[in-house]
Image (cartoon, rainbow, N blue to C red; front, top):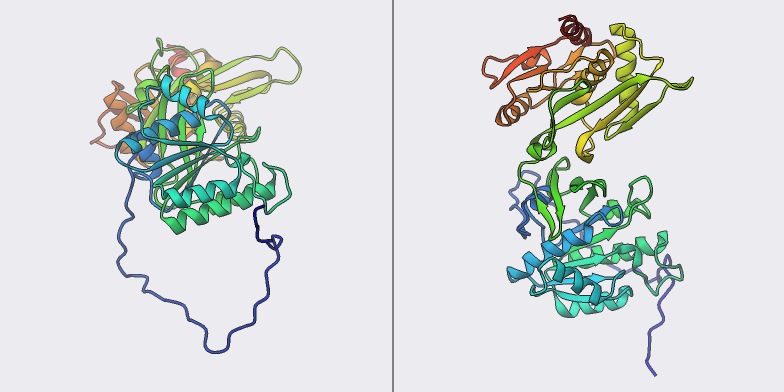
Length: 426
């Protein structure tokens, strides 16, 4: 027989008599006082450390989400192997796979000799008791949806269980100065499954993106209390795991053939890193009464705005044509600087006029048809010059004598269309 203390139901608190006397006051500090930078645990994977802001911060909780089979467990196992090799105490707790399955994956990745402590457990109390006795530096929970607490009668994976388990693990991370990485499932919309309050409790939220048919994977930070929130890390999936890509622009442009109509190279920015990618557009006659609008890798609402500007401000009739837009390589673009590149790709396909193969395009289009300047133009042009491009179509503010390549400035979308009409006439 084992004695267990009866716990009060969640949501109720035992009433305790209020102590007499003066309560302890707040400890106030000056806002301008110096604070040391938090220490970092470098995983040895440059792209992962970049997204995290320079490495893992002790005492932080990080939520990693992504589609099933995208490579979340593979990336974390590779990172934990490097940390364990650097004398860090690492514990990997798997709630979905048996220990033998994790061992087989580690053997396939060439990490079977790494000093990682493995466990297969779904009970939150058992996990916390084991972690308190082991005192690890880094803990991986794969995944948070499989854990359950005996304080609740709800099934594992429900909103109440996910919230309660995440709260206890975050409290453990802060109290023991341990880095906790939580793997989270995603819904059909790509969001973390369960309550959004889990994203508010953790210190960083990382999304692992990519198409399973492509070998490219992108790790994107959408929340980070210890670093930037607009950085991305690019990986390539291979037989031996994920390989970080130090020059993603060359990777996304690899295999690009000769100049064809509807193909444009966009000079974008992802955080502090310039990134060049190919935007493809196809304009074809509508086979049915209602024309189709299909977008992959970009915002469909923003493409509708660009089409409206081209029709109303530039005189291009696209109402009876199907339009397909694709960002090559499975990349997803969020910045409005891609407006001009999308417009150039659509007009190029509609007129069947290819743009220069060694040119890049970037700029934001307003509803009035004006091309607005965008930030970090110098970095975009330097990245284009490094990859062999010799000209760019950009807003007027980018026309600088110090630019490493020739800049063809456009003030309005109408000027872009007129230039393509002139090329078609030639």
